[in-house]
Structures are given as C-alpha cells and as structure tokens.
Length: 126
Image (cartoon, rainbow, N blue to C red; front, side):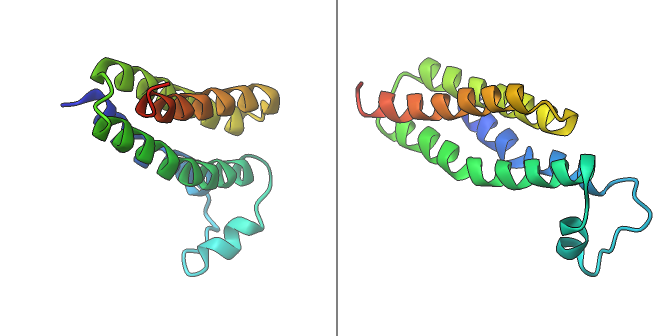
C-alpha cells in the first residue's frame, strides 16, 4: 500500500482520538445533545474536543496535498516523507493538546502545516 495514502487514512482517523479523550469514561455524557455537552466541558475534555476540531480542520488541506502531489507525479518517496511527517506532527499536536503543552503544541502544528506546504510546493515543481 502507498505510504502516503495510508497516512491519509490515519490522518482521517486521528480526530477521533480527541473525541475519545473528550467523551470516554464520563458517566454524565449526554448523547442526546453531545455538542452542547462538549461546549460546557473544561480542562482535559475541552482540550480533547478542541484537538478533534482542529484535526478535522487540518485534514482536507493535507489530503488535497497528497492527491495533488500524486497527480503531479512528484516522487513517491518525497510524498511519503511529507505525509509521514504530517501524521507524526499531528500525533504530537494532539498529545500536546491533551497534556496542555501549548508552546510545544504550536510547534507540532507548524511542522504539520509546513509538511503540507511542502506537498504543494513539490507539486508546483519548487
């Protein structure tokens, strides 16, 4: 299987790590109104929900970068490298979000963003 495509699958599933962190193990979770319940959370659960939202926001840009660089026939090893860096950065981002490490979280966010920009730059022949 293409490593970059596998990374797209993993990145598509990563938001659910935040979801699980926000919802699991809480007895008073309101499954009838989950968004309202999540909006009232604080601390670890609120950060898990924020990590979920940010991960969903980052995913389309990354997936498009992989698709466009693949269509532009960028070397597969280069695409794979950028995709792996993105996924590792997002894992670090989520971990830092949950651990309340804001500065380190921002660094992981930037690395992930730059890896996507790298995908587009490679597709453009830069």
